[in-house]
Structure formats: C-alpha cells, structure tokens
Image 1 (tube, helix red, strand yellow):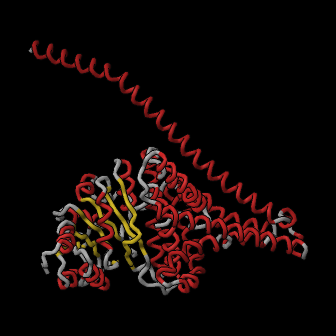
Image 2: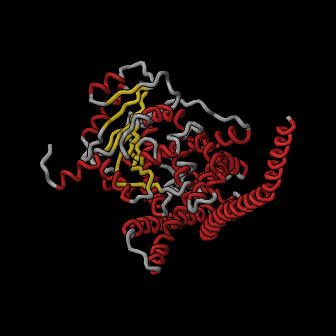
Image 3: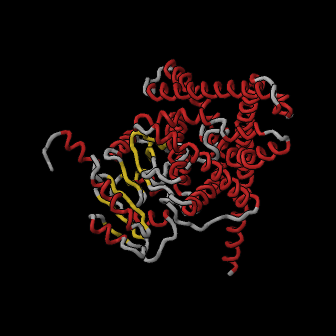
Length: 152
Length: 354
C-alpha cells in the first residue's frame, strides 16, 4: 500500500530529505563507535536521492525556460506567467513552499507529542492523587461491612 | 534428500521452523501457482496450511491435490484477518508466514526473508512486491507505484528501522509475537498495518528485505481496483485513528505517518480540486503541469528498480498508467478521510479484491 500521492506529495520530499541525511547519520554513528553495517544501502539511496534532486533541478530549469519563452508569446498575457517570468523564482518558491510545509507538518507532530505527554502526566498525577481516596473508600467499605457483619 | 552436509542441514533447519498460512476464498484459479512456488523454495516450509474460508469453488480440492493441509472454519470468517487467525491456531512452528492465494514467490524469497530474524528484536519481515502481470492500465499503474515505493520509500524507511507496513500479501512473523498481539486484528480493514504499528508500539522491530521478491496478481479492472483502494484507504484512516497516540512515541514512524496523512488529505485536495480550479480561474494552462512535473523524479527510482530486471521499456511504457492510478488513488484517500472523519461513517465491510 502506498498512501497518498507517491512522487509529487510531501512524502516524496520527506523521503528525499531522509535519504540525504542517511550518510550524515551513518557517519555520526561511526564516530560514536558504531559498526559500519549499512553503507551499501546508504550509498545506494544517497545516489538515488542525488539523481532525484538533479532531475527536479533540471525539470525546474526546463520549465523556467519554457515559461520565460511563453511570456514573450501570447500565453504571456496570463497573470501567473507574468509573475513567474524567471525560472529561478519559480524553483525557489516551490522549494521553499515544500520545505516550509514539511517543517510545519513535522513540528505539528512534535507539538502533538508534547501535548499528549503532558496530558498523560496530568492523568497519571490525577490517578496518584485519586488513589488515597479509593483506598479510603475501600477502607470505609471494609469497616462498614465489618460493622454490618458484626451487627448481624 | 539428506546428504548430511552442513549446507544441507543449514538449509533444512529453518524449514522445520516455518508454517505458511494461505487464506483463500474462491481462489481455485490461482492457488496452485502459489503452492507450487512455495514447494520450489530453496528453504521449504514445514507445513503449508490453506484456510479455505468456506469457498464455493474447488479451492480445497486444489490445495489438497498440491499437498497442502486444508482447514475450514465452521462459517465464513468475513475477512482475511479472520481466516488467518483461524489458521494461526494450527501453527506449531516458531515462525509463521502469511501469503495471499494469488501471490507467487521468487525461489529464494523465504530464505532471504527468514535471514531478517537473526536479530532477536525483529517480529516481522516483508519483501519486495511486484505485479505478476503487467498488461492492463491498472496493473501498469501499480507496477510503477511498486517499483517507485519499494526501490526508494521502503528502503529509506527500513534504514530508519520503520517500514510503514509489513505487506499482508507476503510477510513472515515470529509466531510468539504474533500470538502475543492477538494475531491479525479485525478492528480495521488494513490488518497488516494494524499489526505492524502494534509491533512498533511494543518495542518490536519490522524489517523490509528487498531481495525477497513476491509477485501478486494485481487488480486487472477498475471494479477490482476500486475494492482494493477502498479497503486500503479506509484501512489507513482507521489505523491512524486507532493508533495515533501510540505512534507519537515511535520515532520516524510518527513523521512518516504524518506526511502520509498530509498527502492523503490536503495534497490530494490540491491535486484534485485546487490545481484545475486555479488553472481555469487564472486561465493558466501552465498550472496543469503540476500533474506531471514530478515524472522525471519518479522515473529515477523506477528505472533503478527496473534496470536490473531488464524492464526499462516496460517501465517507461507504464508511466502514463501510473499518473491515472495516482489520481484515482487520491480520490479514494480523500473520500476515505471525508467518510471516516467528517461524516463519521466507518467502512467495515471487507470486500475481496486482489
């Protein structure tokens, strides 16, 4: 099962970034005295990530040229083409939008994690505070039943 | 044949430790190929159990003819998970493998997959999935989707120790861990995702073994594809709802699920609604390039996956089908989010597709 939009989506950017970070992570692991076990995968995925980044850059470059060329033709009447007259602006804005969205999503996950942890801590501390009450209730029940038992 | 050599004993040893479960409902047409591919493995399983889920065709007869053990629940279990759980009660080996009745394996698939269990913390292992037939639009779309995902996404996930899902069509498990988790859950429509995420939350690991290759029959027609996508999309949404709190404590997986959820909702909305609306409103056809702008990037892992199989031509020819399937996929995921979360209509009917 592939969830969402393979390729174009935020998932693509996420895994691209993950692959780019693999050599850094592996080097850090080695520096900490870990064993060099996964270099084959790291190199393979890094090369793939490099090629994907290269293809994205080339697509952006080609698209920029196409749009610039079109802006000098009749298609250039449209708003988007006038605004995106240079390919560089288009590429930069697409890159910033993608990375910004990814940062937003990953930050949201971290915030959610902190919130849930705080909730759990609060629930736990409430449970600890509530415990003596329960014990007290249980004691009173025992006493009551004892009293009841004796009275019988 | 027992030749007494070390190599032979090494090959024999794991075979006595593995039981294969094949849930089957009216699978007489494809089951023989599946059992035959299991018999041809470099490491043969100790037992092949076909769970005949009250089929009305010759499923049981085919299974028996090919030497498998056939078990039959008193009534149809209603889902693949139900059938697998029925079979799990008969397993006596430390490892259990689940395989779909329409899936065949590369001859060394089991051997490669079992190697992952050398690490005692690993509870499940899954392999590389490729459609057995690549003929129709839907099969071609799936072919590119799998080549892309299993060559790139899944290998990155595995490096970070968190494959998103141990695919239900071909996975092996430690029987003890499987039983400790109650087998395959019937609470969602994606029992494999439910189990994988449960393992992670218990501190157990899952591995993706790209060398272990399986070949399922993918939906040939839209009618079958619709059933499968409906099940997968609703299953994903149901699992996010069920596990989200626990997932927040699982590094990397929490991020992978979050971006998947984003792609299934907002990105799908942009893709299906915003792009065409903006293109019309701004009278700018250039915006429609958004549908194909990433094709060169998609082609990189696709060609890397197809080249060793000498299938580059087939892969290039299949790319347009992938774009169609991706659009349909987005429709189903967006629909599932809408129905499950907004309308509160949880889809529970297990519709058998492929």
